[in-house]
Each structure stands twice: as structure tokens, then as C-alpha cells.
Image (cartoon, rainbow, N blue to C red; front, side, top):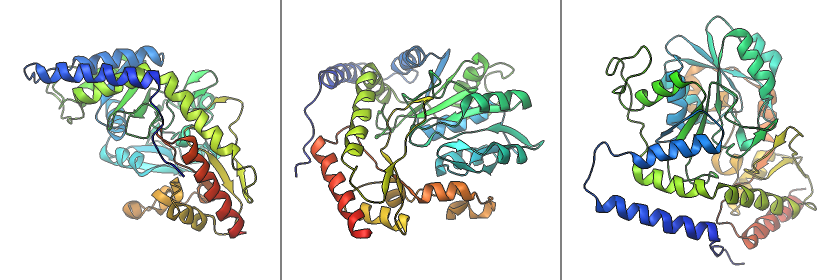
Length: 373
């Protein structure tokens, strides 16, 4: 079965022509160490597109998380509450500040609020929900929880570009929302990331933190604080601007791809679609199915061997307490999150996946499920 790349859409063709023209102009002019016109333009366009007061573009989604935490004053001795179902990049960003992640049990994207309350202490400074596969926690309840306790709310929305919750964009509920533009994300540029915020002071501190502390920020004169080199390069910003201009097309495509694959799996035994609730306008980031077969993680690994990439089988997605790289932290177990991730098939799809490719993945999944039973 053919895996050929789909024909370029008018939006993709326009994006390529625009990006190539901008890259040519960039290459033709004399090098300017302070040149960041496309990065600054991208910030304005992102803020406008997702209805935020400020956007800060950065070198990666992990950098966005680190910058948001650092700009929020999170540091040594602090604790950050984070779902047990988190990717390692989220935990790394917390540790880079010197803070300690504290795992809260979670399932199907939502947090266990009883566990959240039990683990909130005087050392807790922030809550960091992770919108895996574009699914969000109860953000209205979480916003109120943080406001009542004076906690920062920082959203890891790296997989949630285009998701709306209660009619509002994911990543705009908290003090800051963090996003990735790595390949595979809906808005992609090879590498890169950004944060959204309505807090002008946080945005200024974020820009300074991402530029070695050389920029002034409220209560932080230029050079008064150490920072990092997390700036987004101009060529990356050019690609991101091109894809942002066709974001509606990219969002519609991902939703259509996910629906297409799920529609082909209605006869797959032991697999049921995990629906989103009525409060989500979900971005369709990944087709999600509940695996009701024996040894579900082994089943996901088998699919990966057969060429069906998925979170558990290909990338080993599991709860943070089971990650070998974090074993020295002795993180608490999260049984509901573990059971949820262990029985979730999240198929990885990409803009270039044709209907024929999606049909082939559906055929393999159905075939393996029948044999597994």
C-alpha cells in the first residue's frame, strides 16, 4: 500500500513560497547578531491568534516550561504539583529550576482533586497540568483552586495547540501556557516553542530569562540575574510564521486524520474509542483508544514493531514515578494514572499521513487485536 506524501494543499504551497522568500531575504542580508524581526513578528501573530496579551517565542517546548517557571519565581526548595501522567520533559523543566515535582494522581487527562489538596503544602508554589494528546483537566476548577491558594498555574499545552476548553484556548487559563513547535505538533517549525501569558511582567521576565538575563524586567535590571540562551532562531521563526498562517488548515487536517483512523477501527475487538467530554473542542492530536486486551502495553509494543507508532509502544510513555532517569527523586506512585496510561493506545499521526497510510495502520491494529484475543 502506498505511503506517498499527499498532494500539497493551497495553504501548504503558499506557506512554502512565503517561507522560501523570507529565508532568501534572510540569507541575502548582512548578518545581524541582534536580528530578530521574524521572531518578534511571530510573537505578535501568536498572541493575536490565540487571544493572549503576550507571546514569547523560544527554542523548544521544554525551554518554554523552564522559562515560565523561572519567570514565575519558582526555585530551590519549592514544590510544583504535576500529574502522574506527565512526559519527562515536563519533569526536567521543573528540576532545572531547582524545584521538586510532586506527582498528583490523574486519569483521562483530569487531576484527582482530593489528591491535589492532600499534596498541597506550604512549599507548593505552582500547579502544572499536562494536556496529553490535547485533552485538558477541569481548567475552570483548577484555576479557582490555584487562585484560592495563591498558587501559580502553568499549563503544559505542548500537545494542545488548537484545543478549546469551555470555549477558551488551552494554554490561556493559567499564568502562562507553554507550547512546542517541534515536528509532529500541529504548529511545527522543526524545533521551537513559545509561551502565552496575559501578565506583562511575566512576559518581560521570560524574555530576559531566555536571553542570558541581558534584558530589563520589572524589579530585574538588565544583567542582574543569570539566564539561558533559549531564543528562537530567525529561520525557525520564519517556518513557524508560515504554518501559523495556515493553522486552521492544519487543525482541520489533524482532526480529520484522527476521525478517519478511528472510523476504521469500529470492528477491532478489545479496543474502544476514548471520547472527549462536551467541554472540549478537541484538536484531535492523537487517536485515543482504550485497550481491553490482556497485556495492553505488550500489545502497544507489538503495534510499534508492525509500524504503527504509538505513545506507549514506541516512546514508552508511563507515569513519572516509573522513569529510570527520575528514580533518585522517589516520586510517589499514582495508581489511577498508571492504569490509565497502561491501557491507552495513543496512535501517532503526522501531517504527511495519507488516507492510505491511515487505512494500513487501521488494518494492522485490527489484525493484531483479533490475533491477540
